[in-house]
Length: 372
Image (cartoon, rainbow, N blue to C red):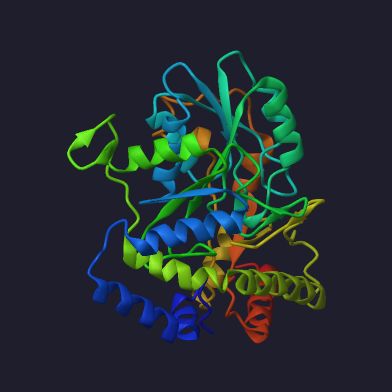
């Protein structure tokens, strides 16, 4: 059997006429940078997240960096984020000259432990970046309460969780600002790279618009030092098509998660810990991530049988050499370290079929029961 981790070709086939029309419309129009498609996408994504403003940029990482810069965060400031995540949040904090302060995670959801975040606050703390990991929202009530009491900014990292809900509200509209990634494998993915910042703060959105375009409102007049970080029209047109399908696709991912749980029960795989959904949360399963012992051997064996998997993430951020000179990482991070040793993401995409899910779990059962 050959089962990919994600199948973008199957997604394209399902919406091919809409995608082809969108490409033709942009090419025929002859405008490829910051045109009507980007403007429309910014409005549509902002409305989807429940915010008033959206600013399209070149990537999710750029969205993080520009949001931090627009909030005035820099040298001498500290920003709290998770020790178990992709490198981008900590990298962006270090890039603007601030110090990433890494904290441990909740073992059930893989997201930031609010109690650890509270313990990490110092007089230098200026912001918190909760990462909604694998499609599961952070405990935003606790994080927002902490931020409110301490007068800190909250910048949500929604790169893996667009469409997820916390307390009935979609993530992205809960903090001062939020960042999105449109990397191709994301729940809402482009055919290249892209990102966006969404916010209810008009002044913040205007500063990010300046920063993404060399600090310029009028051609050849530059108010501040910015950069070139612009979402292009072709990607925006693709994303506008896909946004219309996102809720259906996320619903399919949730059905697949239930199908996985039922398949694990049928095959008696009680030694595998399945993803958990916290109270007041709606998971959108960007990745379907289980926990098991002997992860590396299991992953190699599944790969040999044609089942693609991913260990996200096999090491924690305090151990990344590039971050070592920049981060503040007191403590041993026991939950993050254990997760890094045990997590394995199984195939998950809207077009996945029930027989494929059963094949994945059957293969996993065979590998676990076999000792090579």
